[in-house]
Length: 389
Image (cartoon, rainbow, N blue to C red):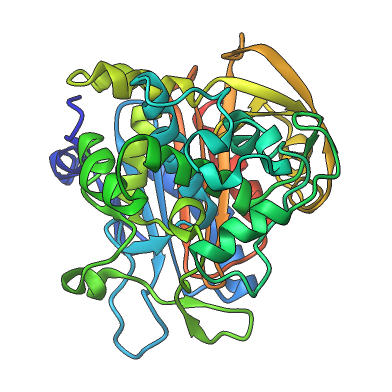
């Protein structure tokens, strides 16, 4: 199937003999639709989720199951595979792809230190870390978020200059937006541009992701779902320092599934070998952290994976606590079947993306409610077991 034919694949399946209507959307496989229904429908009721788009690839075709509406407003449009959702930290996989592309092009090396591109950081403790440490959250204990008073570029640089590590680089993982956000900023500088401009005008179009963006244009606002916070109030993501690099991407489920397809089969990027290699480099394992292997953007577990092990790999402990880390030298692709995954959340949205290249399957779950990660992972696990037992 050509790189940009995923939308056409859905159209090609719209015949009475090969397509059934389900939850307001077209799905190619009734048995798969039933599995998704059983896994997802109870979560929507339990957590009062207004809308969710589920997109699945079985290696050959795209399957879509959509639930609910874009907002709680009366007569709001129904969710489709083209509804725009906030991806939260799934955005980090785009940052990783940009950084790996810069590395393939010789613009940076993951062994570089930040001050090569941000001289203001020369001599600061953060400069003991490499770009690889920043991308794998192992710089020494950077926090999950910047302090609330960090509001601009100057404040960001001041913060990094005064930050003090709790561990040597590469020995401890602490999940951190400032960490991988700094990698994204450095990668953009290395590529000679602004991060948002480079991603929106170069990287995403080159990957054929026409329905993924950081800034939603006014002409597309009608497709942009409203998120709902824990008080069920409508919200959308707020701007912040390094937000584009860490949690700022918005996309449709169909487009995220296209990105999954490229990760399943990078060889489909026939026109640009450097982008193909960049995708492949995001699959390298760099740090062992308990049961998971941390790559750039994606986190890895051997497949098949028991549900309890998958839940542990996406637990609060993995997000909020310091974890001892062992470097994988040289970095390598896993020798056996592997699940690559990433969760993402903003105040009003929740996402989970997972795929298994050896089985050619993947799933995208996008919701306009930040409901518990454990429930997202459990539902996705059920669907993947159906696709690749």
